[in-house]
Image (cartoon, rainbow, N blue to C red):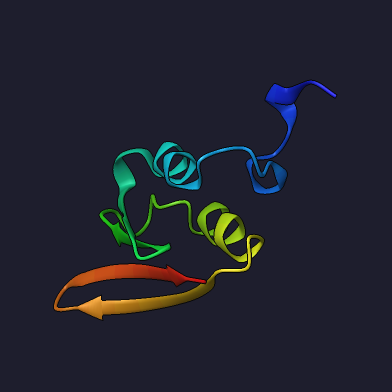
Length: 78
C-alpha cells in the first residue's frame, strides 16, 4: 500500500501534533502540554471536528470540550 494513502489515524509513525496542525489549518491552533494537547478552535463552522476527534480518540486520548469566556478548547489527555 502506498504510504501517502495510509490514513493519518492509523499511522503510528507520524507526529500527532504536526498532523493535527495540518488538518486544522487556519481553523484552530494546537499546543502540546504534559503528554496531551490543548486545541483552540478559531472558526467553529469551518473546524474539522470529525477528523480531529478521530485522530485523538483512535489513539486512546480522553477528549474534553471546554469553554473559557467566548473561546472553545478541545483538551486531550492520556
